Length: 370
Image 1 (cartoon, rainbow, N blue to C red):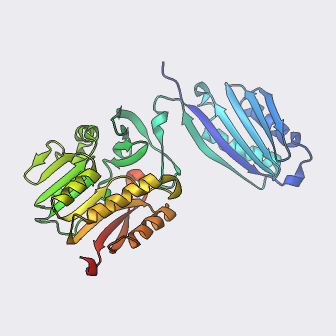
Image 2: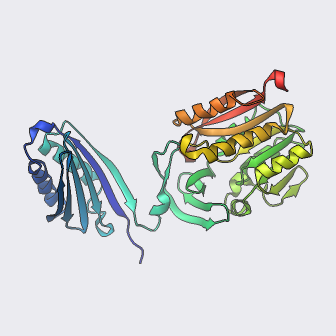
Image 3: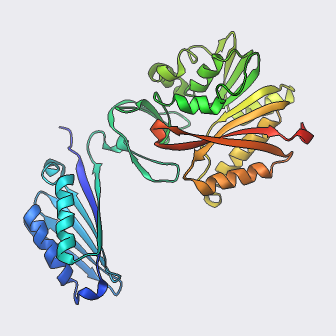
């Protein structure tokens, strides 16, 4: 028997700290309203300090309520409703409960957040984060694939709004709805790829290869380390990648399964040059200090990519969401300090399954260093 989703309601109330002489003047009216809306309430734990009072209440409907009463007057409340009773205490009732508590406490402000769902058959696939680690909820109705390759955790989730969504290590990568991502990355209509030689690093979903092959290139070489990603996307993300991943070679493309840094070194040693190099690998790290390995990887990719770029060529890559202001600034600082120097432009587009505007970069060697 499948477990029903448990619901957690998060509420906060801002009270005047001098209005109450004891914690019970706050706790008692909350208990009264909980008994009205949920049922019998029993206090099972209390811990007091100069800064806060923490309380746990055991309620009917197999529910638990935790309270934190801060010395500043802030009241934080979590209401955990058992899955069997999640329809009894819903978002509508939670909003009414918030209004009632606000009135009883004479709070100057309050807020209730829509319930977080956990424990149900699809709930662990429901939540991902934005580029700056804000919570995003997806309307996943079934799991298409959920496997681990030697390199990463690969999931393809079917969503009502975005179609099949590729998720790698809990990061959304591309959905069937996201043609705008690929078109903005390649600057469709602004760059002529006719007869050009192109190198793609990453992009195992195949969408970038598929869209570039429509542009009349001479040859597109793609380097992707994870065969499992390509196999799954060729089966389940076909509206995005078409037939691009059906064969590792074709009249105008070749796919190399391998590490991009190793392959860049090989190409450099063979004096192979490209008109365009695309890096569609990992996102820009959120901060520099804790993630030096990721930053070093991105810098190595950029420097080695410039080494196989023709003098008039371009290096094109994605950045991060526009809300990741510091990460983008750090990335641009790295671009400004590259040797030999480069010049770059940036643009942005709203990517449906990312639920945010995404930033893309077009990088060239400066005229004096071509």
